[in-house]
Image (cartoon, rainbow, N blue to C red; front, side):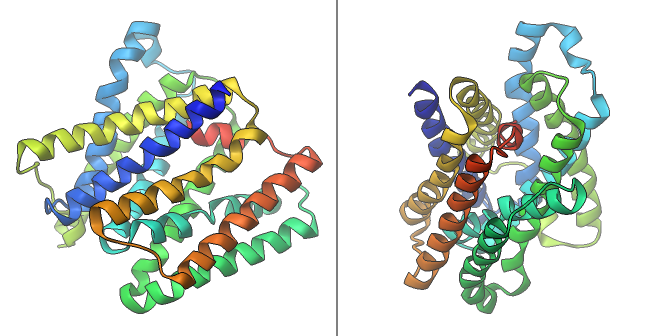
Length: 303
């Protein structure tokens, strides 16, 4: 019960990070690239004191420095695509499309790691992608190729999880969060410089224009850092197979925030697509649990 309670709290507060990112882009005029930088920079600032308190200066030298920096780069790339998506699209749509990530991860695991995937799970993957197309189709007519960005975001995050499976974890979640913050911040500095030089509007560097803006970008990084640590804590308190379905609670929170802050609400056809995606994902979780194949991928996702 403690693990479930912590997980639900995390699934409520983590979408607030995405709502803040959309608010900064829509109402504060900040580019998604700059918002992504602040997400990782203030994540680093917020968790670094805790890391130094618990582990000292030696904690800043993880056993796998370059691997953790690469984790930060992959996470920053995924976050950038997500934040660009929510600037133009409703939160619920982006969340729903993004949740094709478990299907992509299963495909990559089968192709690269040669993991056995039965025909039922392959069928669930096909049906899940069909649900995503139901959500994407009307969005594609309105936003064009932007509506496909959540799919590429999901692909990058699936690659990140696959890398975790291959390499494993030799460092604490707190150390990994800190080094990922460094890697993500450095990566975004380069991306913003290149994107701004190319004249891309979504990479314009800027500072917050108001005290509220500063508060929001600091909250953005803090929610990211400690929200994901809450997920790690939840997985330490309850089995992965029990907590996995609660990831989909993010769609509910994202929909509620989209309605309350931005007056967005999915149409009936999009609700159908969301239901298909969630149903297919839950079926896959159930099949993996039945087959004993549900491993630590979801736990590493929290990190």
